[in-house]
Amino acid sequence: MFETLRSWCSKRPSTAQEIAGHVDKISSLLSKLKEKAECVKTGLSERLKPIQDKYDDTKKKVPFKDGNVDADAWQGKPEPERKEIGETLRCLFKELTCLNAEELCVGKFYFFIFFFLLLIASVVYVKLHKPSPPTVVKPALISGVAKQVRDIELDIAALKKAKNEAGNKKTPDLEKKIDGLKKQVEGRIKELRAKVDGLDLSFESLRLLGVAESEGERGEITETDSLENLKKVLLPELESLREVFLWNDRRGRWYEIAWWAEIGVLVGILFYIAGCLGRGSFSRQEIAMFWTEALIAPVVVLIIFFLFVLTGITGISPATTSIQGNVGFAFIFGFAIRRTLGLLDIIKKRIFPDPSPTSDAAK
Image 1: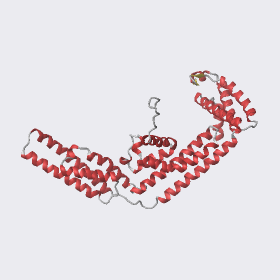
Image 2: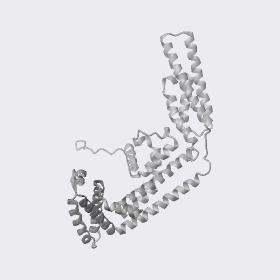
Image 3: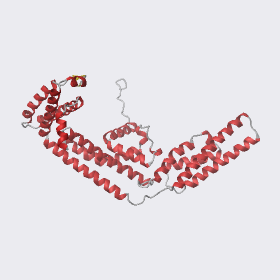
Image 4: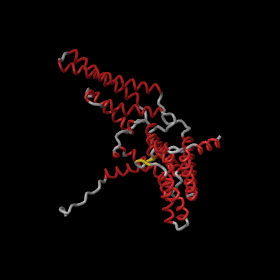
């Protein structure tokens, strides 16, 4: 089956997109091998010269437009010529990868090292998560809290309406109705507190609950967004506590973030090495960076979460995101660890702005 597929691929002419890919890979690999030949005095330069000449001659036959392969002009070429050019470029790329075989062997070796590290991290993670999580919220509690929050919202809406009516004409009945609604809102907030007592809630949830309770006692909750802010934080936390696999207590959440950051960085390193091998190139100089990234990723991502507000990211709020969402973001931050390090640089500049140079006049 695979032989038939390989035979069919060799018979059909290459598409413009495939030719562009071959040209990019060969140009990049030639450039890197030339740099290597300059650093290491071997016969590599002599072996590269005929390949370079053949590549230059073949590249002249490929139609380009605005720096890209012209698909229409390429399709207009005779099929035998397209086959010949495609096959020549494939052969040149194979020759170059053979010249770079030593580096590619090192790349494959480290690919398997980081693959096994990812496998070990995943197996240990699953093993540690087999016991029941510290806190599991029952469905009845979640639905009860959701109902309680909605009841408070409806009572606040009714209280606002009654206050507006009283603003135009004050009557004993309206004042009595307003007092009754205030007491009802106050009582419902106390019931909400009773429902969530005993849960391992964050400081922010407890703070917002206290603010809502205080404003409810004074009838001022209609003038603020306290309940809406509480809902944004409380409901995702209940969703997190409902999670039956991830560690969902306050300490366990940080372990989850660090662990998923490590898994993310290992996946990112594997993806990067696989891309290098696919292009026929690998740089030993980056090995130290791979190990550094794997070691620092959990710490860096945790720091980013600790100082999230200072990063300038406004589309994500860890406080209003469930544990599932937070570990997902931790994975992405680990996967793109080099960009994540850029966020640390942003935080550094916010805390320690670059000093402005002293002008000559000031001197």
